[in-house]
Image 1 (cartoon, helix red, strand yellow):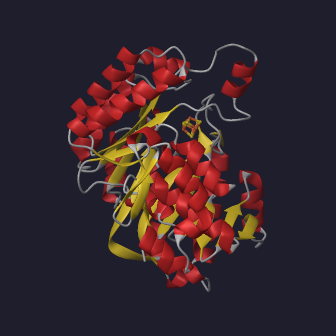
Image 2 (cartoon, helix red, strand yellow; image 1 turned 120 degrees about the vertical axis):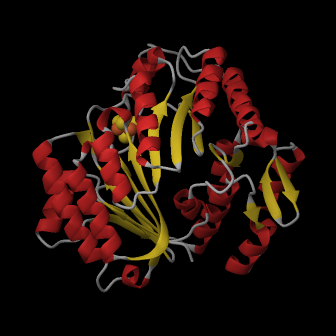
Length: 380
Ligand code: SF4
């Protein structure tokens, strides 16, 4: 069974006002303490735990901004993961980067340290939108880093784009997509901007500094992205993700398939059997606990059969192929209709869900309201 290893680097040069991922302002000394603690966590997690018996198929270093760490720190983390855990020979090894925190030398070191997938947070190909998003990089820097990544040898590059940015026009979104495709990345993630609670944007929104993005315009942007990217040879394989054939993110697939994953670093989640655990969401506490020989797990939960079933449906529906109802029956010993028949019928009648052989999935129209429908499975 595929299994993923996730490392959360909890630092950014500056917090983006829309972001609710756990991260702190970068501090050189704290980053070194964190790196040392993380290496101890890697060693502890691989000894006498189920993870010592696991062969990992993916390694993903995300955050935060992993590339705020120095090249030797990143190299040390990668080396320790790959030498400590059992890993597939062709493990998919991804590092996320903010364009402002990486240059040729760091790229080269990552490439030489077995990173074979590079994920670049481009977000927009318009400087005014980047400024509105509070991003520290410019379009020019993003383009330069992309080209540099190709030059050092990366053959699997993904870029992230955001739409429904306050003030963004349809034309400008279209242009971002066209410019992105002209770069020929292997993978494109296209997310609509959501206003997450407790972010600066949530406060600005509450203060009336900007209003909600018009729903019809947001849907038109999403539909355009699907049509255009598919016409350019990208497979739309998950609500927000598009890939050239053979370049889907194997790591994210693990989450959507409910396969096991181990998360290391503050706020990182793990999932094994029916247990989910979250490391403490505080870098100082994470370091303290590890230095004192205490467990860095902040919360854990044994998921009930009910919750596991709901999650399995909710996650599988994110994939364009949808939920394999035969696999569901095999895993849970029950038909998906037995438990969720009412919800499925309601949305099928509305033309939002459909069956295709043994798969249950969103229709094109259903994709526009996928998050709302998915949440209904979680609280039927
Ligand atoms: S760089 Fe990424 S992780 Fe950091 S604050 Fe911005 S969006 Fe969040």
